[in-house]
Image (cartoon, rainbow, N blue to C red; front, side, top):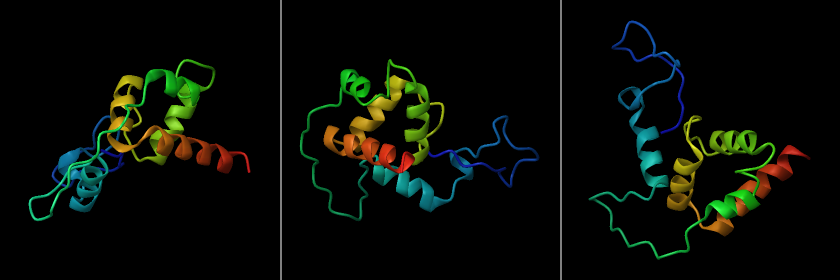
Length: 119
């Protein structure tokens, strides 16, 4: 789920981090997050996704997202770009990235973010 700041109408005060829980999200936000994760819906024809090579921890290191100087900052920036929770551990991030991307797609996303950052 993306980090969405706010307070649920049914509560007097917002949460400790000031973010909405799943219950307070708009249905469109939840649907978009589920679709990005590969969910299919009963009223749609779903085709099985083709098998693909899993992204590895070594590849995260090669992209500068793990184990090196500035890796935490780069991960945080990627999480923000992908509208993922900011407190996602590197292992959880790897699981999410494998659900969303091939290595080539991830590499394009990271390199594209780097190009925009330095241009």
